[in-house]
Image (tube, one colour):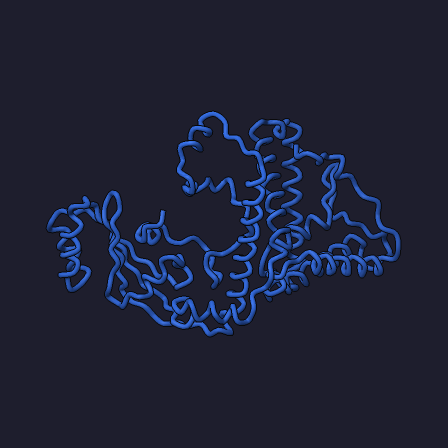
Length: 370
């Protein structure tokens, strides 16, 4: 069990006194104030979040009215449903709804009902798990503790990040001008990648074949003639979907040109088969740049605070980790951590244009990204 959380704490609270209408106004007002005080600057800068807050207030009012039986004069209640002896509250529904993007006001009632049904199923599963003592399984306890630590560490990072100052107009303009490949000269890239099995002493011969070929099929035929094994793939990527540290190199390519990278087990050739210009104006890019720069500042504040705490903390490595720590040269970066152990930094996109989704594995490998 998570410390401080018991089933007893979920017992029904006494309903608030007073006319239902006044209660609804008070709940909505408190909810709006909480969003205003607790929200960070990034949320205020995002139009979607503004409607998000309105949706949250709407669903809270809608569910409270439903619980009150509309205007029937019934006492206001925060309970949305009862599952055996346990209750599911309006606050639980509201919390889940806030985490669902793009919910329109007219969709609030349907979304609330769907969330409630899922919460009922979840509560039934929890009750059954407790009857089977699944919650006492050491693996489950460890997962609960890990989740608890992650939530607390994330809350700390968010608290520190709230002190970051918003970028100025000049800083936003400067970033726009410094990144033409992302904005003023933004392109959609049609990329073809060839992964070739080869030894380092064969790289120059392959480069010569590539430079001597007039077309990609001609180059592939030359590889086949010399019994080189290779695998090809094709992808279309916009500028913001390419890692920033590789975008400059790709943006310098003209249609038909290539980048060749050597790997430990072979060679990767990345062709720019074609591209299409789709520039973004400063006005269009401004919200995303502001969010990106603000997130950078938050991450820097957290990193600085963590470093200060490390410098003042007594950290002692034990067992094999003591040997590993002693043998590591000073300033050696740590290996890529397990995704199950998230870094303690505010969420920040790698791209200021706000692109979502993972970068294609083939493209990442072709550019030497592990």
